[in-house]
Length: 251
Image 1 (cartoon, rainbow, N blue to C red):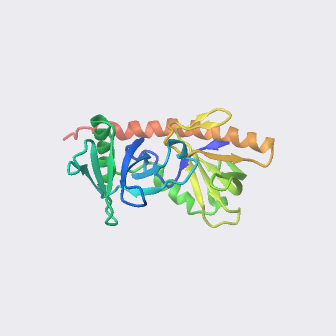
Image 2 (tube, rainbow, N blue to C red):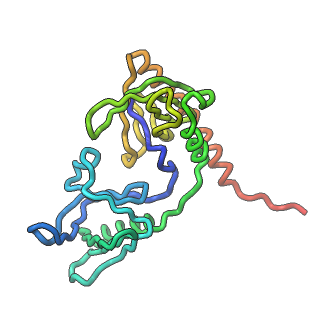
């Protein structure tokens, strides 16, 4: 099974995402100057960078920069075009970056500026899922599927066993059936149901699971498909309700 986006991130949070190569100014090591790095601005407002594009998703980032509250702006002091700075709120280190064109620089500045001042929106499932994640597994009422699944830990290439509860398009992960609360969870909305669950955007992290046998594997796949189908129409109905115009007050 391949599923989900992390439950710890509100699924409709309107943070921008941006990715691409930038040159980063460095003053460390024997070589001083500009180094080409692959940068990724995540939905959570954090800027990750890697040595190469191929390292994204396979290797830990070289560094993670939290952009909320940071100062971002152009820098013409170096006499080099398309240079801009990022000074995180925490710490006194400044990151000096250089794009390949004026258009690229504006694209990054716009995305990073929005990430420095995030607009948080409440989500219909946020309170429900956070409440459910604080419950023991068997306390979640009317689950659509439950049982053991093994999750692939990409950092160690080892399978970790979880007791899992599927409820309303959310998969809750527990260390065991005796756990008092979930150790994590995955939002499944937006994923397409085929043999594997394909994410709606490459920005979402992919999680790999396997069941104890073929029968259990098929049981989980069927339940996941049904849960996602149930979630999407309800989500759309709630969004339509929230977006409807206010009625005029009658005297």
